[in-house]
Length: 100
Image (tube, rainbow, N blue to C red; front, side, top):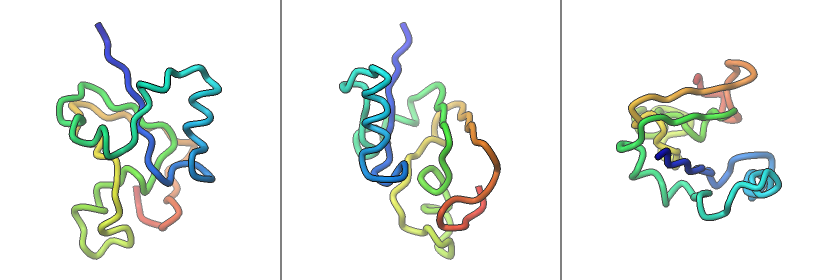
């Protein structure tokens, strides 16, 4: 009874499409790999968001802080889920240098 889907931000990874390729190599069915625009509205009805190695692409400052370096950048709205877990190698900032 668990519904699993993957959200991929357009600029996630080292090059466009990299994460889609990695998920395909891991035999993740393509129909559960969604683009950010396809899944963002669903996060409010999501029990758990599990984020692996992201910074700027999930930072709510893009929407909440007009003075942020990432203000206006499209982001995955993972924080709207009932629970959100983020796994990273470090707490270092992302490419834009914005705090996590």
